[in-house]
Image (cartoon, rainbow, N blue to C red; front, top):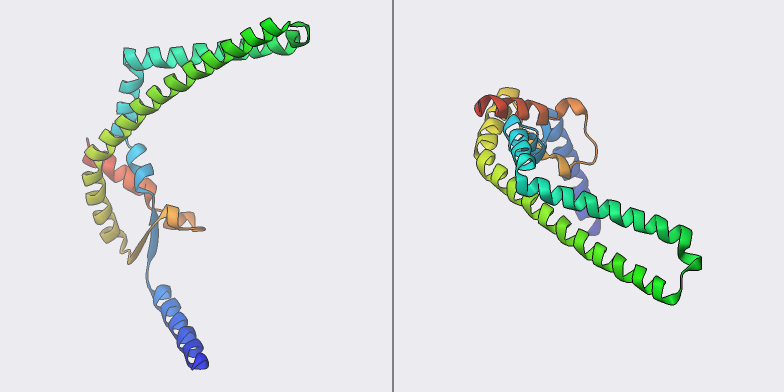
Length: 170
């Protein structure tokens, strides 16, 4: 019984390998195609130009610079500080870390919201373009690039999908 299962498994493997050899396989990263499109790049630029986003980014950068300056000061003076000065430093660092974490979460929320709107807007056109591309390229099996460990770059359709998506959104 065990030998029969092994023989059947080996036969199935050979049959599936020979079937794959006759099929045209391609790989695509739909997300990369969508976010590489001109529309997505334009929307990202618009977000970065908004005063709210720009002020959040400036606050993040300023706080990061303050943290770095405070850390450098601590490195050079820590050994000479009293307990009170060390506690004061620790308190300042905790406040700054909390500030930068909150600002980072706000920035991430803005970016995530933009990404969701871009996907919602472009995904139907990307899927339509992908179907056309698969038909044009005579692809029998299409795999997500995230699911593939190694693939010849020639079978990656992502750049072609981005080009086609750009044509559809002009």
